[in-house]
Every structure is written in C-alpha cells, then in structure tokens.
Image 1 (cartoon, one colour):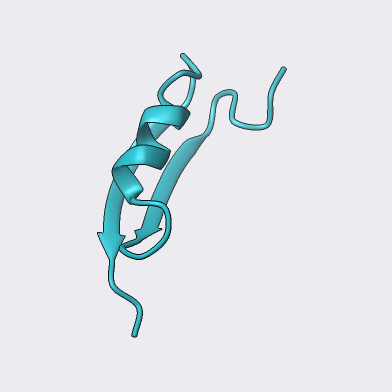
Image 2 (tube, rainbow, N blue to C red):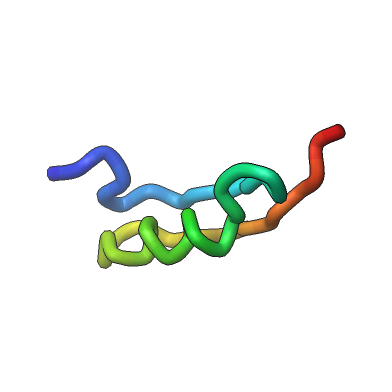
Length: 44
C-alpha cells in the first residue's frame, strides 16, 4: 500500500520548477489515486 492509494490529489506545480501536468502524469500511475485539480502557477 502506497501513500497515494485511495486518495484524492490536488496538484499545484511551479512554472519555473516542476509543472503541474508532469506531477499529474506521475500520480496517475497509481490506479486508485484520483487527481481532482492540477494547475501550473507562476509564483513571483
């Protein structure tokens, strides 16, 4: 059992760091995890 099993996930990525879509692709490898929101923001 992993840390993301049966969890709903909110992802906020960083434009100059790791984009939200890249994190989302990784989270989606866990079949029981559900991404409910994913975004990439610019923190200035």
